[in-house]
Image 1 (cartoon, one colour):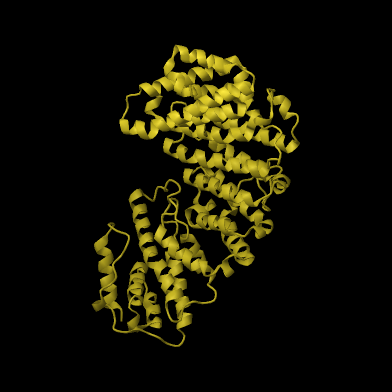
Image 2 (cartoon, helix red, strand yellow; image 1 turned 30 degrees about the vertical axis):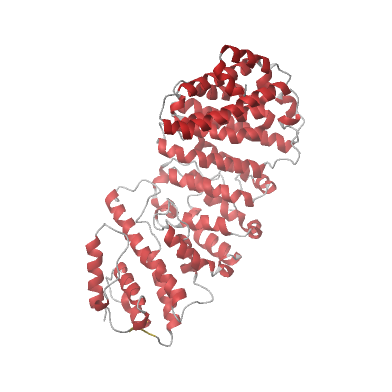
Length: 552
């Protein structure tokens, strides 16, 4: 019955080759004049039938509702067709973008597999929309779980999910939105997705640092791994077979009601730690991003009692040193922001800041950070110790290894602007380590040609002044170093003869931020009882062009 249609479908697919991902519908002349859903169901009954051909025929036929003859039992057939389509388009291990492909899969075959999967999806997702919502027999009150699994796999566009696209995501999300009464329930989220789908996929490769109940293991019960396990496909079905598993897990994290977290948190931790433990850059990034979104659902008490707070910190910290030249620069630029963001979220959840921060620098006169630290409660001390570790093991250590890479330094400087306000006055203990990072950039005569790096340095300096001013302004060595660096940078910016368009759009922003820092220095100096205004006035007398820097 569909021989002509199958021949036309085969010709359409063969003509495209690897040129495109969307397929044109079969011409009307090659389709039967009439057909039923039962007859369309038979498209897959013949052996050695190509799924893509059958999907194209089904799509072309359903696009002409006038030729579709209704029959008793169409609702059940529609359900069967929907299940078949959902199973066909669910991505499999033929596409492995998260890691280096095994030897038997070269780049060409993988590219072909990706195009093939996308073509099936471009037909399958709209077909599911038609079968479930567009036919007279459509709109069932609930959907089979395999269909929901496929829709979830396609519902979030991501560079790490090459099988979907923004348009497919929109269609899948629209269908899911009509079944939230089914999807956002404990039986579906916990019993089905987390327990039946996710848990078995991640159970073999979970780190020994965690127990089967999702808590911190007191001592690893299994022998130390040698590293070769990461290369075994059988140990990571979530990575090499069910490639959609991370997308599904992320969807659960994003959609599970907060009221269900207390009953299911132990099901989340093994997959998260497995992702953070994987050597693949894209997977580590996804692990950090998922953890950042999951942590706000947890409490400080739970993180402490289960030992997960320490585990998450230990899992994230090594990523801070994924730096060139051991790690490709492009990968480092993606990894570092994701890891730092996850650590900052962990800090705020694990050690919530007190309502009244007695260490805020604006409420202090000049005093040592150690004196202020003695006044704060234990949670605050633990929070400060955590931030100190991130500063030492992350920012300072990373700079010593990657200072020849401006793009990495820009990331570290931006993180300074986030961490220093959390430290408050206690940032003073790090001045000796972080101030040279900033002043070296400010005094570099070529910095105006690297405006993103220069702007990051100025914003970092503003954070240093704002939070560490009691010591920064009262220590002659630090104060004079900052003034000298600001003046040299200001002169370099004024003398820069770079592209005029760049100067108008970027340099003006740099100058604006420098003026803010200059005026902050004067106000902070006056608050600290330092005669900095006199020093600046003398400086302006000798070098009049720096007057604009300090509002003089």
